[in-house]
Length: 124
Image 1 (tube, rainbow, N blue to C red):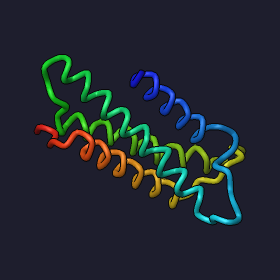
Image 2: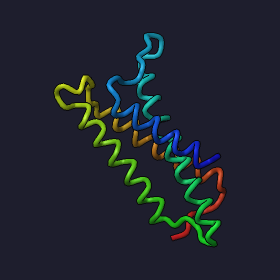
Image 3: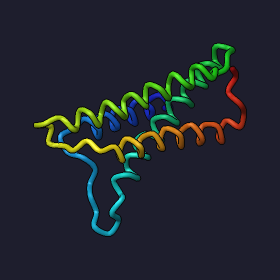
């Protein structure tokens, strides 16, 4: 079930980042799209880390710091690339540095949530 949730979160993230329309704008909450960006990265980051930790534990290992850094790096590259793709003429979207920053904050929040849930340090 966790793997399914992880895949669903990743697919939803990619649709949100690369689909033809961006986050829904609301007049009553001007920065709602930044919150959506942060959540759109925090949830998949958290789920990928948790799934990776569970599979590592099943193999008698722990998720190492290098593995966590690699996962975070892939998410960070995706954040930057998605904004560059959105900034291209004809994409129908606008690339925004603030969106990329919100994405990076989301990556950090996903990592913090993982650390809080697992309650232990990731081995080095």
